Amino acid sequence: MADNLKDIAWQAACAVKGYDASRIRQDACGAWIAYADFNKHESMFGWEIDHIYPTFKLRQLGVPERLWNNPLNIRAFHWKNNYSKGASYPMYTSAVIGYGDTNMEQQNVFWISDPLQDSLRGLFKIKE
Image (cartoon, rainbow, N blue to C red):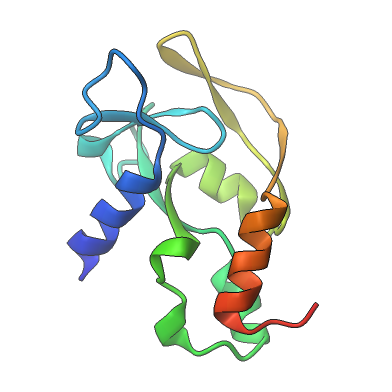
């Protein structure tokens, strides 16, 4: 299941023209990530699986754990961005963005799109 989840998250990341999408992509903040660097925190291109709607909040809301890993709620995220995001939702701050063909540390504020928020509320049956 873990490898399947990894691949689902990878497919949710942005493919970039001119790069092999099976090896290199960008996360939602534009940070470059490398498939081979999954869970490698020492790598400039390391990434993790992010739960868009944080599991901490889902637990608090009583959402069944079996729903947390729904493909709609996961994505590949640079590990520094995942750490920076933490349990923030729907607004969060990045730590790393893409710059040319590398990454640089920079904080930017991002917002989960309204349509995705609506879909996640529907999936988790959350009334906000």
